[in-house]
Length: 235
Image (tube, rainbow, N blue to C red; front, side):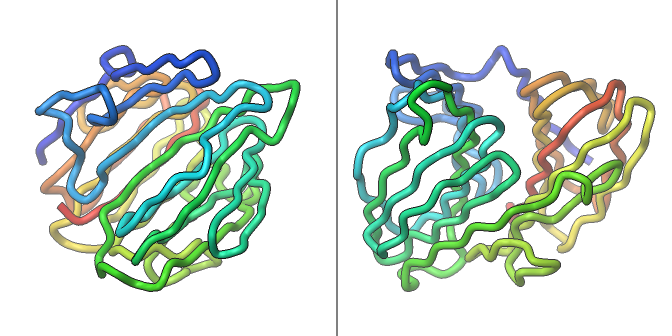
């Protein structure tokens, strides 16, 4: 087993008044040659957008873009004709494929929205653009992992154009859980949303991340009540 530790305070940061963003991996004006991604996981941004503000219409191609609201709500509009609001407890996947234009704005004029913006390199290039959104009840991830993104829509997960799996979990302090990888040769990136955990001999706190390779399964111990996002990707 090999690991790479990314403590929360070591992330890049961009402040634009309307946007406060923390970058786990190199993005925009933040460049770190040692942080160019983890396998096909290319971007993991922790964004806080001010009320009424957001990302204007812009284009993407050949990228899987996942949005996970942590608080508040996000208004989405794209060139495929989708106009949606994504709220805490929901997950959005947009397969940009041959090309798509979209905008993402805070759906509230009074409260900020905090969401994860995640990019994954696709398995197949130049597919027809595709949009997916699904709500995932929090009670179904109490002291266990809940798959929310998968390549085969297992258990109602949102489909992704990659052999990748995203799982959310909420664990009580002291609980242990094992995550079993779906494919040999994949790696796992553990990102702590809230609380603290111990995994692979490392202690992680809020917004800390740990990449793990050469392991068939990992064991996680919740050092406090915690919430986790586990991202399994090809390396």
